[in-house]
Amino acid sequence: MARDEQLKERWDEVVQKLSSQFADGDHLDLDAIIYLIGVQELGQLHRTFKKDDKISLMHIAICKLLEPYGYYEFDYFDEQGWPHYTTKAELPNLKAGEQSVLMKEAVVNYFLELKFIK
Image 1 (cartoon, one colour):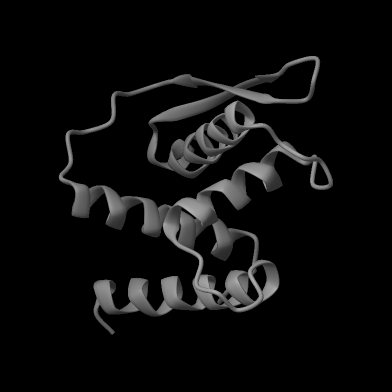
Image 2 (cartoon, rainbow, N blue to C red):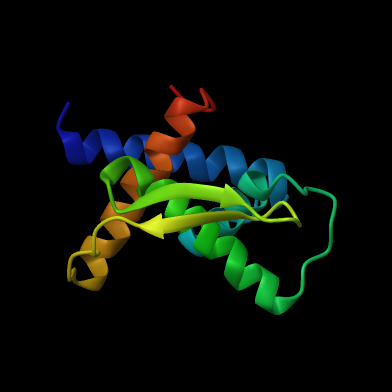
């Protein structure tokens, strides 16, 4: 199976499983999935977040997702339990479609590692 085809199949599986679990079957987009990963990584699942917190949650997720690619490295948890990362390498200048593919690949790898998908 071609790499792109396998990524698409795995991405579709992630979207389907998360959409049925968190959105009553409504289709979750990439940003919504990144937000959910941020909440998961923070570990404060039953909390209401403000708008600024939601942006921070997405940042946490992006750092976690791109850590295996060498762009970020976990640094520490602050006194409120929020993880902090340091930048290890600048992100490459990618076109919007290329950014989307990179993030989808990172999301799929994240959920493969958690054994959420196969």
